[in-house]
Length: 257
Image 1: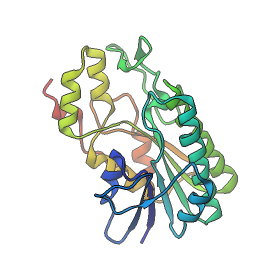
Image 2 (image 1 turned 90 degrees about the horizontal axis):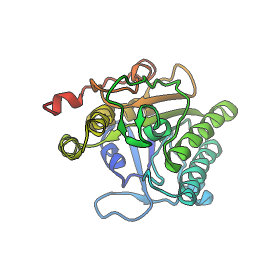
Image 3 (image 1 turned 180 degrees about the vertical axis):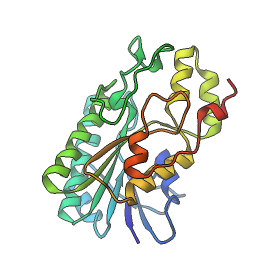
Image 4 (image 1 turned 180 degrees about the horizontal axis):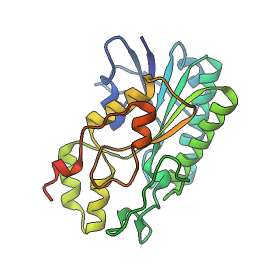
């Protein structure tokens, strides 16, 4: 049995992961505020004492909590994302937790293939492949915070021997939302971005399940987390090889053009 702490369980990805694990695994959900529909404990990631006290007696932390908007300001991403992630890593070391799975973002590499400084409008011509070794190129303060947190978790992996998986998560949404976003795209560059970045619900469950439970052939690991989209430019070769990720969904199968 793997005991898993899930921070940010009230968010979209967090809710998807609540029942993503085998029955033998134990998931403890943590949320910043109360949710009537989630059995969770309150956790303030900006409070190091609260984090250290509550993230205990688990094997793995999937750390989703934090400011999630690409438009978040510097003060918000600094306090919530940077400091919050450090508090989680400190708690992991203090409490003997084996692994932290950090929810990074495509926004950490968001200026690759972007057009007119719009991270959600990509080139309609040749697209550069963004593999797991691609240097960070953030598109916002939010992206900067995710890139910085990747550096922070890598530091803990190297110095504290903490197992770390950084997942550069694409655009998680249902098939219905994918179709809605594709219809709303006002040009081909935005439509291509939607098709390239999609992470389906079941692929989201799979990549996080593997990140939390698979044996790691190396440490730390930083990989992309998108579905097997025909139009993708984020490489998932490394995700498949290092984590055993087996994506099954393709935006092209959902969209009719």
